Length: 115
Length: 112
Image (tube, rainbow over all chains, first blue to last red; front, top):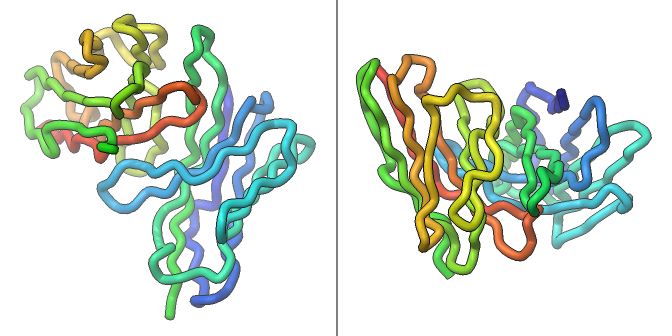
């Protein structure tokens, strides 16, 4: 079965720096790889999606890269702010047939941006 | 546009009881997914409903079941509750972009 590894240790960085989070997976390459943000006790919030034939995707201060050879995705937050502090989840999407997509999640990396 | 809503926010039950959790998808979304997030574990796929039918289920026992109503809202039922069922249960919906799932705030189920 698909296994997803995210850095389980919390990542502490200074405000204004770039945060880089890693997601590694085994087995098959997914059709899509997604990143979500989750705050304590809340549901995940969809941030970015990247397809298997895309190398990089950007949205405002966020950038995602996808290397299917290395089976790795990197998630970058530039000019980080304390409000970016949260747990970031990597999820791999695989079509289930009938139009549905099963998401397999990593356990997430906790990011803390300090002043 | 209203997001995915779930009720109740918290639910406390004792072992052996049944729990019912509810979800209303984003307007226009026909697919509803249920996930379990136990402490220290990643989200685990439970069930997928689309157009009123159960389309797929994850590796969970049959005592986890549910349904989807004609208005696309959904209900998750957990029978014969066990202590390890304590978790955050998340509902997500998707529409014409099936690879994008939008999550609700979750229901925290505690089994004592």
